[in-house]
Amino acid sequence: MPRRRPSTRPVTMPVLHPHAGGIDVGATELYVCVPLDRDPQPIRRFGAFTEDLHTLADWLTQCGVTSVAMESTGVYWIPLYQILEARGFAVCLVNARHVKNGPGRKTDVQDCQWLQYLHAVGLLRASFRPPETVCAVRPLRRHRETLVQGAATHTQHMQKALNQMNLQLHHVLSDLTGVTGLAILDALLAGERDPQVLARHRDGRIKASQETIAKALVGDYRPEHLFTLRQSLASYRHYQGLIAECDGEVETLLGAVASQVDPGRQPLPPAPAGRRKPHRKIPGFDLRAELYRVLGTDLTQVPGLQTPTVHTLFAELGADLSAFPTGAHFASWLGLCPDNRISGGKVLSVSTRHVKHRVAQALRLAAQSLCRSQSVLGDFFRRMRAKLGAPKAITATAHKLARIVYHLIRTRQPYDESRLAAADTARRRHSEARLRAQARALGFQLVPAPAQAVS
Image (cartoon, rainbow, N blue to C red):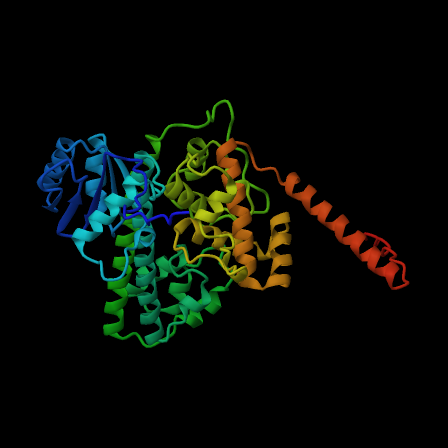
């Protein structure tokens, strides 16, 4: 048979998106690539001013581009994303780690070409982005966290000033910024130095006695430390005012979010019994009721999920999780499931992916708070901790919380712990059967312990 000559034609992938473009986003300039047959100069450079972004959108429209891919570079992509989305473009926002180019090919021009090619052949997956009403709440939620951290920093400055004057007030009171602590600090900065008079500001809920507080207020009142204390207290109260303003703006934005449930027909369930209530109202409005209205279910019924945690979940995810087909996809997106790496038939690693996500962090903190919970999830966390250790137990419990949250938001159903309890009962029966079989194999008989009488 005659020998076939090797083909010299280049191997190309089928183009799935013929009207695709690619944009390399930078702080001061953007490089845009369109298909080669759309313009004599298919790669152009644009500035980062708003006028330049509108010119960029006009040029894409002129070239017949309908879909655009760009990397999520810092926060520089946000203005362009909003402009393109408002102009009717299908914007594919991708993770920069997923579109790495080969070595020796790292330039802005080649990056936009690479993005355009990958998007044209359908190799890019768009990042999850909630609706615009949720995106408006997200930066305020993150800004509020920054304000709380700033207020905590000034609280530490107050404690440092008290330490330098040997005033042990913050060691006697559990919260220096509570009613008693602020009243004593105000009187102290007003010129009062008598410990007995200062101790009379003690609130009735304080566990420490008035005599103990008076002893803690005996110290060396130095003017330089008093000056630091005064400024730190003023800064703390300034931050509290900013936090209150931020809460008011969040309340306004949440009011514009569509309701998933009518609280009049389906009222908010009562708060779970046995939950530790916060000592102060954070924020200044009924956030739990608002989150129930916009989510369609009360996630605070889930053990470990408090109102601030649910607020973080809504600000980062919204009320629509249809972008994730199943709870497993949702948990994988958060990096809370094993990442199997297999090469040559050998398992190299099953550890979780290194994902920095606020939702995953919130779920991990919620899982860690279940260490003493008398619930099915608390039993699961303690069992996993005894089996795998604390870090892996936190991840495993956060994974279970993620699947529960996904199910509740998708179905708008209330949390029902009996389903988890039934699974736990089945696990106990399986463990008991295994123990009985092992006992029979060793020639023993498993006898249940007698029930202890309740006195």
